[in-house]
Amino acid sequence: MKKLLFALITLLMTNASFAQTDNYNVVFDQFQADYNAGKYEDIFNGFASVMKEALPLENTIQFLTALKSQVGNMESKEFVRHQMQTYATYKTKFEKAVLEVNISLDKENLINGLFFKPYEEPREIVPASVNALGSYPEELAGIIFSKTKDLPVNTQLSIAIIRDGGTEYYGIIRANDTIKTAENQNRIFEIGSISKVFTSAVLASLVEEGKIKLTGLINDFYPFPFKDSIEICFQTLANHTSGLPRLPQNLDLSNEVNPYKNYGKKEIDEYLAQWLKLENEPSTVSSYSNLGVGLMGYTLGLSQKTSYQQLLQKRIFDKFGMTNSFTTSRDLGDKLVKGMDADGEITGNWDFDVLFGAGGILSSAEDLSKFVYAQFNPGNKELALMRKPTFEINETMKMGLGWFIIKTESGKDVHWHNGGTGGYSSSMAVNVEEQTGVVILSNVSGINGIIDALCFELLPR
Image 1 (tube, one colour):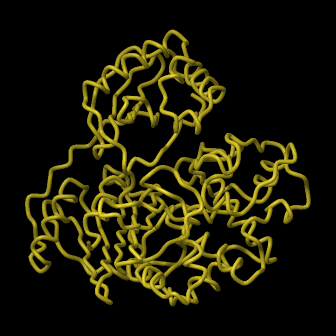
Image 2: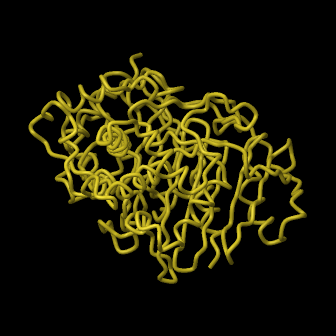
Image 3: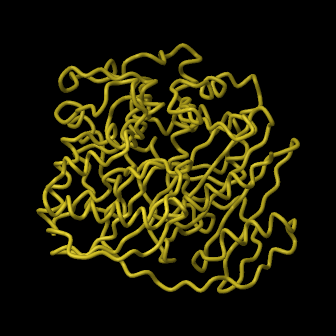
């Protein structure tokens, strides 16, 4: 069977309300009926507005048509589990394949997230029965244990809590049935999409020095016209309002182990000249795009006649003393914590070419805590520029440059981003007003709901 982009849409689920199982079953039954009958427009009409904006009707029809041509009609489904109180997972038997279908609903029971992938029978994971975190504060140890006791053997978390002018490190590792402490604040993890914050930091530093304009066009740095004369500016790439899709159409996803490795200059130039098509009018909708931020990082390098990685090293890593942050996993040896999938199987590391800015950084909890501290220094004008709201998503969430700005129940602004790759999940939150922050790095993929929840629970109030 030809490879199919099963990820129809991935949306932020952090603040999503979670409907009951019965509601999910009703919606999924209707989805199955409409899908089998070819009523794709009816499926689209059951989308939440944010889903419709991210995946217009034409794209929905194209995707579902391609899906049916490859796997046929749905024959049966079996509810499997709720994932982190954000979406429901169904084992779904199609005529030609068995897929895992994940579905998320908003408070109106409209679909705001869908994800299709080949189904794999889950391995049995015996919950850890021993909490060996006795050297940590009791309440904190209990919180960490409750969130990690069901994760695979060899799971590691490296946690930094920034408050009262200092940083406290809490590392854990699961060894068989025990969660115990580990000194891993200097161990290296892939940080995934937290890299987008750093790409925006490079942008902001160049803007502060007057080398480029925030509203300047990236078109100016390419020797060819973009398809349909589409214009794209830096700010819309940094706050996900460019209208670009999540991924470029000419990205070959057949290499699931290392999907971005072979997407280079030839491919991005071809995309911009021949494939470029906006899904939304720029500056009207914030729609998360790995392509957009990856393209921004690559273009920043072109603008300064160097590579983005060299800009990152000089302008961010060197400036803030991040000596334990890297742009490749090569030659890291035992410093690198090996990544795993959600079943505990070792995975390979991801390599990036031109889309590096979207998710290519490797770092440690200690290094990222230095970046958190840098947010509290008003002299770092580029970081202050990043934190300014540039687009309002809803009443509780805005976009800065690279940052999601979340309004807490107490009315405080928290700047946040998370990340995930094939073997890692991470989360970072900063409250500049209170000068507090949390960094969590893990070596397990697909557990962002757990890591994000722990991040916000540990954030000092």
